[in-house]
Image 1 (cartoon, rainbow, N blue to C red):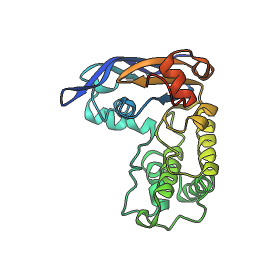
Image 2 (cartoon, helix red, strand yellow):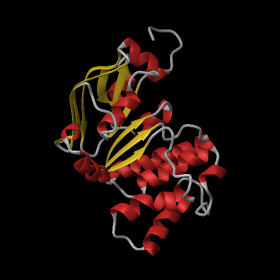
Image 3 (cartoon, rainbow, N blue to C red):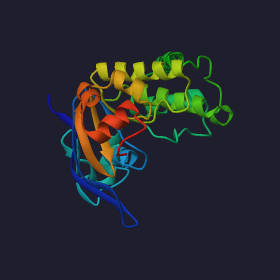
Image 4 (cartoon, rainbow, N blue to C red):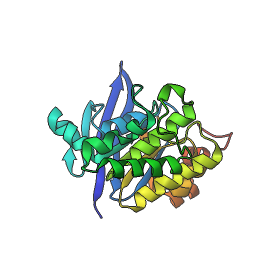
Length: 247
């Protein structure tokens, strides 16, 4: 099985401050990869690089063998159709209701008819515990509800590559578990998933592999079992939530 995503010697600075420092990372096809680490360690920046939203200062980002940042803007726009994405701000369209927000990628990227689109919307809303929310508007939703709608939209198209930045933030434990189970099923359908989450207890129940960023460097990359049993002091402290240690 080849690598769906390869990060090669990537560096990035903002205002002279290093954010990523020579990161090398490979995500196999069909893998659910968890990206963990303390705040401001570069996790969200790395996700945005994979989609071409942020360019590295040096190094390469290869997705399905293609250098994302060597593409023309037109080619990149077309290539992004292969992604499902959920970032921390949810990026819902305020002028669209819930149904139209979820349907947006389906109408742009598929030939599905409206009855089929409506069926997918109903299915996704049930999964994220918001049945009957089709006609609601984002302004009337709580932060947790907006997050769930974002997850529904990111998964509705069954894209081959899906990226999540804190998909369960602000959710109750039951709904959080449902979200992670949905992400696991997405990967089981041969999607490659990269997910950033602070909810390590649930994240580590669904991931195949884990990478840990610390101060812009990838200090661990291995299976979930290896992460749990790691003796690296930073990894051990972060994964097991220890209050005393070097972090």
